[in-house]
Image: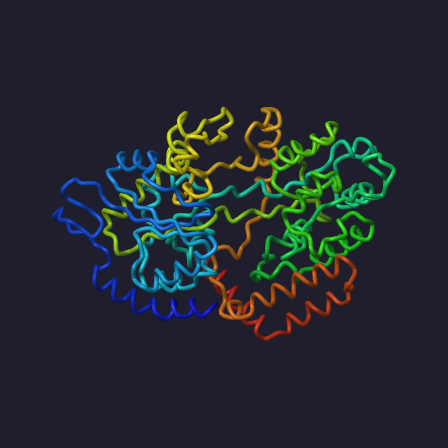
Length: 511
């Protein structure tokens, strides 16, 4: 936590207590009189929203927001904060007691002062209200569970799909040339990846291809261990939860990936590879496999075919582990959360929820994000949106204008992309259904970070990630791995972290 964060966290308690005392918790009167968030005269109710922006914030009044405002008799006043300094801005905002009606928080771990604010009663608990809003209540329960704190929901999660981010992308044309089938087991996966490296699948007579394109910086992908049955982030049993990298399955995984790396089945630049380079290696025909979003097979293929019309990338299920099961990490199901200030009245809270319930529909989401249909954007039959030049000139941009809404839940978002053929889309949807039937949530989602982790977590994560990479590339042995795990088990600070995390896990499970 930097100096600014510490100042904010320290100041917030006094500011929040003062604000709550001043507004009486935002309670509205029963006589219809004006409240902090409402106007009994019938004039539009102001709703202030602070959110993140990944590109230039829109300028001027957007017709889409105006239409939503007219629909609910509200005046949406949106403040966009650039993504590169939102953490500092939000902490200062909270400490100054100048918080808006609705605030976007990207990650509580980087803005812990908001957790302090929740403890002090600065934000509405939404658990009793969500059930009254049909579109918000359609969000999967796992998403709400993951966003909850101590079993209670204090935010509207900005929804994302739970499944579809982990599929095995393979060059089907390379498989066919080498007489191989898509791998169903880990042994078959090893054979495919090593064959891609050794058997000249592109037919150019050179040993210049590899198996799996994989990034190792800033840390290796979690599926390297979880797909062997170690658990998503943590392993659950009757006694509680254990970090998945401490399990026997993790050691089995590292042994497999080391063997695969030695055979050329993983790109040699693994330690320094970045996520964007995974796509580059596949599109350039240097690697024949990746583990990424289901829809990436089609998207990568478009560029790949420009240089090689016969190329054919397809998405497949992950191979089964030694326990006979395929293991997928279920995503958290949201990116960022919206908190509603307790300074607003209950009447205004309900109006805010009405607006967000509407933007939890495809129609409302598109109106708030892209503008007027067939003027500012066009909508294809598969649901994909294309912004018109006129819409772009007005300032509509999914990178920014859509950051104030929670969105509608689309299970198949990672199956589709603009222009995808119907047969490929149907195939991708079936694959996501298969994944969703067995995907495993991270039991740590929704748990507060332990005090020890807040202090030492970044250092621990770096050590763990570095050791995983070193074992895979052969810089460290499996014996070195065993010694490392024992060192971590013997670390008193790490033991404190495990103890506190398990206490939180059991408390949440008992709710």
